[in-house]
Amino acid sequence: MSAVLTVIPARLGSTRFPGKVLARLRGRTMVEWCWRAATAARLGPVLVATDAEAVADEVRRFGGTAVMTPASCPSGSDRVWLAARGRREPVILNYQGDMPLLKPATLKATVKALRPGVDIATAVIPLPDAPSRRADDANVVKAVLAGDGRCLYFSRAPVPFPRDAAKARRWEHLGLYAYRRGALKRFVSLPPSPLEKSEKLEQLRALEDGMTMRAAVVSERPVAVDTPADLRRAENSLRRGKQ
Image (cartoon, rainbow, N blue to C red; front, side, top):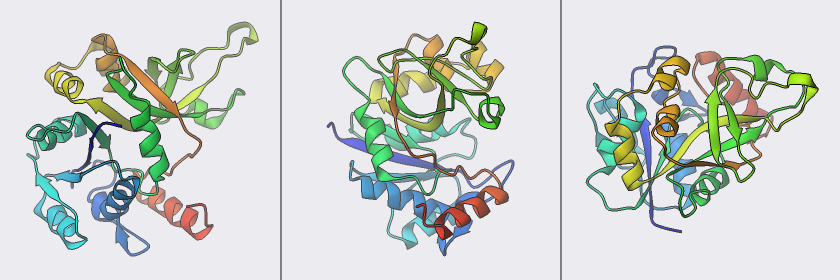
């Protein structure tokens, strides 16, 4: 496996949950939970890219390395590139930090999916074949995959559509990305694409530009923390011993 740099973008502001990266879960901040998962994966160096001294101070407190990036970064991917561009690792893992209880095995599986000829790797979990609340939820991103794991499309709609009751495998996307260094540099240089602006999914920019993406199929469904209610769900998950 090539040397991997893991970067956790940790912007202090958040529309739905301001300051969530410093919110506490069982006595640890969200950013510390993410850093611990990333270091436990033993893929290589781990950086936290932030726009706030308060976050940088917290990262230094628990022994991590923080890199200051501008508050004006348009996306987490741009923040990751600014933190990584002066380094040499050929693979850069963007662990967005809203999944504090993610298992290190999922991070490793994502990087492993970055096979020769693949520009970007990500991760998916199975969705039920039958109609379900998650399949219809626009906040749950769906992935359409080829038989070899290549990513064909991502949508907030319940795709693929089962016309005439025909069945196709359905996948839920997890927001993890392993980039080849050149692919990330190219990605952040591109303007937002039409499909990206329509679906509000930045990974569609890569597909529209002709980049090859491949997904690792993993088994865990981590709790994504976007609101205070999600943080309580994560707490309950820990209490039930599911993490």
